[in-house]
Length: 210
Length: 104
Image (cartoon, rainbow over the protein chains, first blue to last red):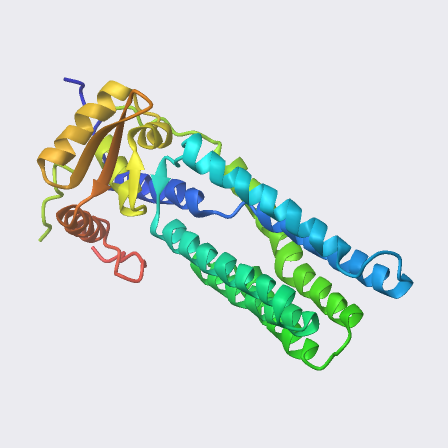
């Protein structure tokens, strides 16, 4: 049997706080997804705006391209999940909640996208999407206790509300781009910075071998 | 008068394991090993002690022909941890708000 080191009360508190911090790292958002999808959505909106103004190609060409890209990505993620068994080493209640929120978001997103293609006017459809982004951001902000997402949610809702009063595709594209910038890109970069800082701090290892 | 600190939890590695498990839903053995920097053998012994005390549940299965051990804190583990922290506070004379009492 291995001999155990004498543990003082102060050591105990230090271990508890270090380990809780280590576990918290697992819930930290690295922001990469928000940055990637944020920039893709932003550029698609801006290209669609320019395309509408200059009348270069069919109106939805960039959104169709984005849709194909998103479909390929989700198929890849599904294959990775089912066939390459990329199960995570740790499960947390926060991750569980966010996974369910993601499912809810993507189901709603798909239904709205189908709606835009078959029934809803695209201007209204994009306004609904902006409002949905705000709801998703609020959940992330609350679950991760990360204020930039919560602020992003409020700004996104404000932009969603304002876009109810525009009636042309080009204008709603600008509102969409602004919403993505406030809700995804800026908070995503901030989350990424914090994640990298926290990782640097956590790399100072403590040897707990008894 | 001070209550005695739970001897099962008052050990460096066992306390580290329980502190990690209190913050997550469940964790694999490799995660605990990585976060505590303990050796596999030692960690295994300490996990067994926590299991015998009823503080954690240990599930053993296979993934791609490799053994996969998953640990999860139990309700009595949560209670024991809370009690341990409460007793620790009284030893260090910290009030529930986190302020130190300097009175002797």
